[in-house]
Length: 491
Image (cartoon, rainbow, N blue to C red; front, top):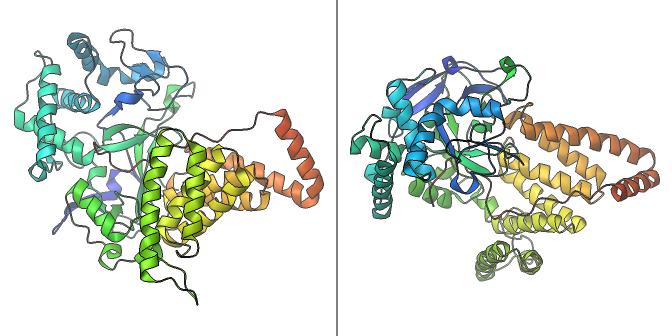
């Protein structure tokens, strides 16, 4: 797989969409079009004690900065790597008496970098921070109020001896963060842990069915010799064959929503009307709203009733999950599925949402056989809706494979793990921690499958003995968060 630099892309201006990125050469699925380190990045306020402030990895034990007592690092290597960006922040926190919120910290880091390097083009950047869109003029009253509060808090935090910036430029920086803040995830890609600014990535326009995906790579500082260290970065990776001159697009939102819902979300969060092919032609909407066909086709009123019941159930499920009442969640899912199954088609998004929650929570409760059945149905639906190389599809197939393995369904489990591995090789690449974990699982399940095919009875005996001798691997506690979205928006 090739590793692209910025010479592989160019910025161009499109009518109605502003700037965009265009390929300068051919790319194949899985190719890295470019990798970009963060211009500036910060850990979320709620996770400052458990996430490294340099590489954004979740660690059991972290070293705390002895000066400000605020920043945390994996080790001395990460701490040294952070010093250039943390130095001003460190003294400002000590002077201020406490650390400000993540938005203020990110704005301060951007402005300290501008103070050091100027606001022109940084090395490897296609555009300067000055040129990034801020959409402040499109802000509603509530957003304008938040912006004013952020600017006031920033001015209280910003040290008087540092370069002073005008109110308009400070507002521009907060607008840039609001529209272009990219979500950073932990090394397993399962939880959003921070927000960063990547100017080149910001130039990629949205498409609901994109030809590229963005993956966050936490980097690797574990090698003994620093020459083999890699820095935290995002990678823009090709999902399909891209020809020279093609526009490079990414999806800002999850595709698993009706075109009208996606357009509303994009207008609200990013201030534009989506004109992609899938939205204009409402492609796949028929699958997402599918109802049972055949002699006993349900009436329109029955469908409407079941969809409303599904929406109400999802609200109840969210409340029960927040309170950790997982057996109640399972009961709600089973009752809802009993009403949905005679009415909704296999690809209906309301059915798929309930199947997804049911399989995740049942896995956590170690009721693996029932979880595997729901996970299989969910994956079958997803495969008909998502782009074949969609990262969220890959993660869902991986979870389904692990659930099948736990249920002792080795043939189906191995098949799903192989399918997930093929997707994540393209979306994440072979060196990403998730792909490496999956490769270990693939090898293990392949070995088990051979044993199963040779002697089924002996396989189950050995599996039983192995599970008795080791702690059962408990599935992670179900999260109330959705998978990390591409860009971070303040709630």
